[in-house]
Length: 412
Image (cartoon, rainbow, N blue to C red; front, top):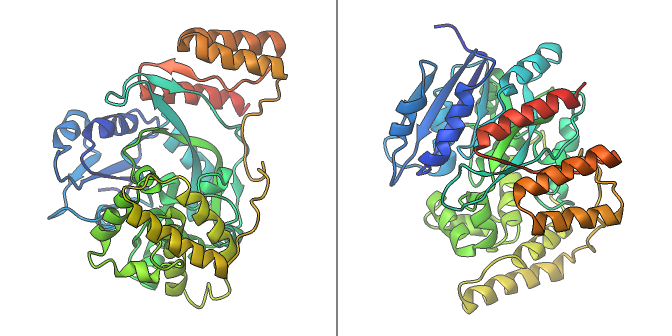
């Protein structure tokens, strides 16, 4: 059997209704030279029925022998891949129909071992059903560009920007927002033993990939659309310390990893967990990363922000975690928060007058989604404005097709 250009690895657990859209977006791809590996790591609800309903000959369904921690399921799934490139597609995301074609086109002109793209959001109108929702383009596309992997690593360890607010840098180097060449994956495994480590496999693999590759390219536009839902591990971890501690206990039942955290014992800070990923991967990659250090003052600021967002389940836990943070802050006084910056981002500009901004806000509050969409379209045509228009769609798949139309025209 011929080697496919790219293997799309889809790890999933107990979310067959979200997986349905993910798999349909793969069937809809214009580019055909790919394979799909669905690793169903279910505990309660199998996705086999959804897979059988949608999959064709390019799709493979696998299940681990027993339920695995997230990083182990990613590793198990990736081991099945045969493609020249390997991408991880989260089950709550869909690819635009032209996504793999765009990836192939960019790499044909700009060969690289790491390819990255951006992501946008789809807001379902219901928490229990995912069909209807709103989507609107949020980026200006730009030309594909090689990016400096060393600078990206330094920015990660600096922690000067809150996670998720780095603009396009948030996506660069992550296998779940791109793909790695299989030769790079082989080098990572030879160097550190495996591709994915806990706590967060997208971050641990990112550090290894950026440290060990000479070439990485950003395609310059979003190829993914994600459901904005509260089912994600990251969302639950950032708002619920008990959820994050339970997730950590799946990885390490003894929770000994709490003592290896940069802020020892502060499990309620997601940035502290990510920082653990950074320093553990750096230590595995010595001497290449010997000169990169975590900025402890910025970590203190990020952790302070984290704890301001969580929902505490008990006063004892709250007191314990705030006490740990206070002690760390005394030893590493955080800097004042910097003003918001537009550096390293490529958003659609909203340079409209205040009056029209107010009109847009009122339209969204008073009118329905469809009427608000039509009104914003009229404003754009009459006044030459660039309101990011979030339109209603019956499905995230229709939103993905609309995104294709928008970005194809925006590139011209």
